Amino acid sequence: MLNYLQGAAPPNVPRPPPPTEKQKENQAATDNAAQSSATSIYRANIADLYRKVTATWCKSLVNHSFTINVENPSDDQSHYTCKIDLKAWQFWGRKGLKSLEVDGNRVDIYWDFRQAKFSDSPEPFSDYYVAVVSEEEVALVLGDMKTDAFKRTKKRPSLIDPTLMCKKEHICGKKLFCSKAKLDEGKQEHDIMIENSLSGPDDPEMWISIDGTAVIRIMNLHWRFRGNEIVTVNKTPVQIFWDVHDWLYNNSGSSHGLFIFTPGTPDSEGKNCTNGDDDCNISDSPMESQSIPKFCYVLYAWKIE
Image (cartoon, rainbow, N blue to C red; front, side, top):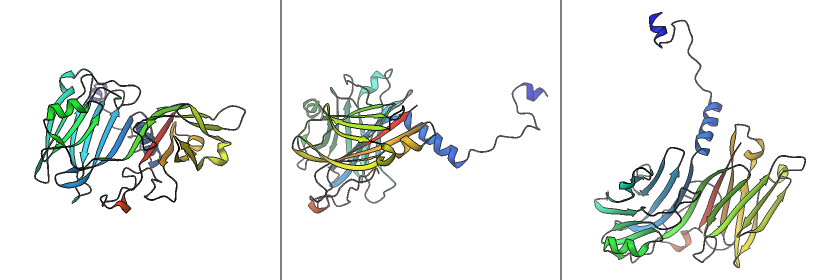
């Protein structure tokens, strides 16, 4: 009795049953939805190989971090990783340097987030840089402060330009989801807005807008919850694929719609990104032109009730 009063469970009280697979799936969906993230996948010349470099920004109610992974071609399950904590009260860590050993070669990662500006996205939109240095060259620079990055590293740009292959974001919302992405050959990022109307007397509808112009309107989502169309952005055709089945039929409390934006037409050269995986169908032989996929932007829109 004394142990029971002190907080121990009474001997005859059965333990609660373990969670079912469905409960685990629902909890995982809730956890994912509670955290917004932005992931960009590049190809860059690091340690004498053209490797995949993955930059991920994550933010939840209690954490905010940036992680950069460098591919290890000999082991798909092992990556060279550098993680940076961006919590506001750790100002001293907003400028720094970390070194990795990649296949026996030193790779330095410099960063400066002291003046970085953020909006709703976990990724800053200005006033920062992340520089990856390998073999006395700057293999990759993220952010808009490239001049500062080169000045600090005192290294020359790589002779092989890095290539942005894919960007993936997880965004939380109720009826409106806003983001930015490059959808044509220029460097300009375009405003993307997805709006839905799923309740009320009328049939459910959805609108997809780019730079303030509605380019797609899907009426009666019960019949068109999955589909694709081609629109034009600055004279560039862009394929838009959507799948919002879970918005309509998932009752777990949180569900996501999948949207994929791919510049170009289906029959043009290069592969299309038609799924939502991390690699976006990136080939292991990117130096061969026939294996280079088109850039694609993947958006997971988490609908929170």
